[in-house]
Length: 218
Image 1: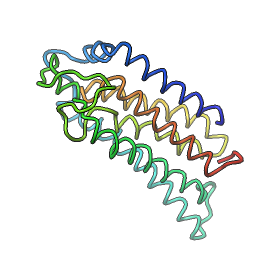
Image 2 (image 1 turned 30 degrees about the vertical axis):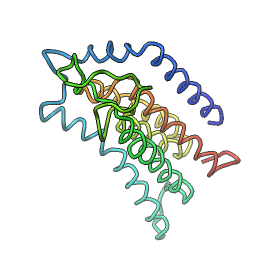
Image 3 (image 1 turned 120 degrees about the vertical axis):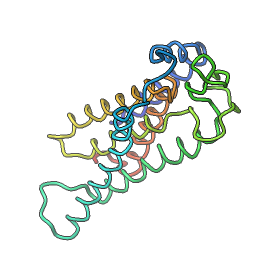
């Protein structure tokens, strides 16, 4: 866990650099999901799939809170999160996907989403991640809030006891990747948006972990 923060920071710097040097990579990847004049996400099943990925992290957080309250009330449970674990979960989802991603970047960067962009049936010019002040005014493309929330699932997985922790973390990364892929397929975000959205949350998770458990553990 201690080396994870350094890895995530290095990957963030690498991602920023690659997409600054070759911003056209975002367009190349977006074109793979653009067919017959549009992106996916138009029918009821596709919208339902998106809702599942949006809601699941908050359902998990609610379930952990219920387990914690039940144990505090004297219910005998095989496992429940500790008070520190609940602070960790609430802080990471509030700071990462909440403050940094949704309130900070998405509402102020101005990057148009792929479906708003010229060449994808939109009207706005493409803007690489490092340019601000695009035509989008609110809830914009940079970075992906749903990728950030999807990768937040690593946080609840990481506070599980050892027999369940490793497979849960693997499943959490798969969940975040699937949520990100769906956003690409729907034309809601570019590849750089989902990569950086996920990495921001992972960095926040490891930074908050060091504050709450300075001597290690979870």
